[in-house]
Image 1 (cartoon, rainbow, N blue to C red):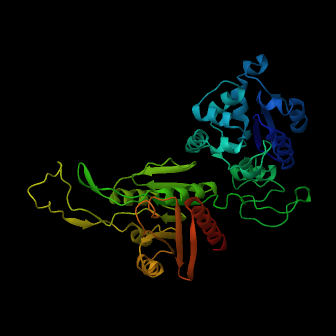
Image 2 (cartoon, helix red, strand yellow):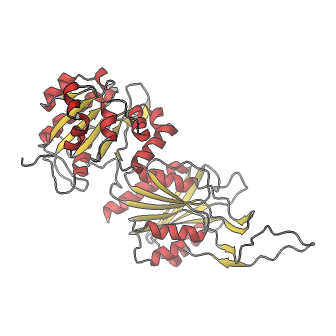
Image 3 (cartoon, one colour):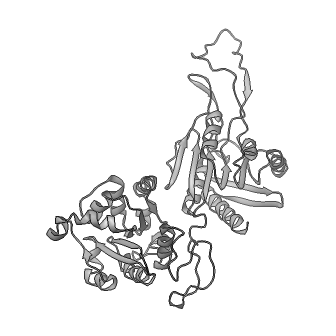
Length: 429
């Protein structure tokens, strides 16, 4: 093959390191070349001799090689590569990368490179779910590093959940996708291709089967808006933002690029999500339009219908028994405006908080707003038990073709089901 692509593979510590050997074989079989950097922790699970035999290249293990570093080897290694792949990427290695730490060969060359980087995490489920790890992943993605989502299943430690290293074939497909559409490795399927996989006669697989929204931009709004009356008072509602944040997280896990426009809420930013904080409906409208174009927009925010016609500069004082007069003006209809926008998303989904005649009001809103779906939820009930602010939700998915009713579920599960429905809709389009 003329001008083969060059992969620099960093092997972190963890039992999943043994899969790096299979990945090297697939990289070589595709016609690419591969050099390996083996960390001290990785060397506890696989040997440099094994990696050298499979890659047919020297394996680099230390920053203190007199020969290599006389030629600034760590910089040269990263400069020669078309893509740097970290597999497995442990929680420790991801944390060092996010913090800009350079205390060994792997982290030093990562800090000294402008080559694209693909990280393939593998770790215990609780380590993956820990707030620190999720914060580090969000920072890495913000820095432009591609971080794959781990598989879910049984682990060597005996626990079950997300944290398993994706299979080498799936990683290989992501490598090809990262290298661009002008390169097609033999035996590797692209995200939208079907058919037989000539690799070892194995059955065809969908390379983004765990990331069905890969390559899509999903725009989500969440939370309430606060419309100031004076410096200490505002008009608002009881929206917690939990459902919108859960949808943003599920979309990111499905591989989407996610922009989350959030009203005033106290929730952590989901991993891999770009968050834009706003306060008022006017600010939210501006942020939504600024985020376009998007393939999908999910307008979950409970935007205040009204705002004060004018905001007092000072706190409004009581004057006698009569309440202060409050003149209101209507806020912009962000959902309807998005439906008319020249960059209207291909799939536009609105939310409707209703207290009665749920489906009837939702269908009227669907027609009035000119959107594709309305997700209506029943927010009636006493404070503390209502959907607003609660952990669960029950929804009606209203479309032009019918209505689906989902009984009460945790909001995270509602989010996962909604993202799965969106993925299928886009795949069938």
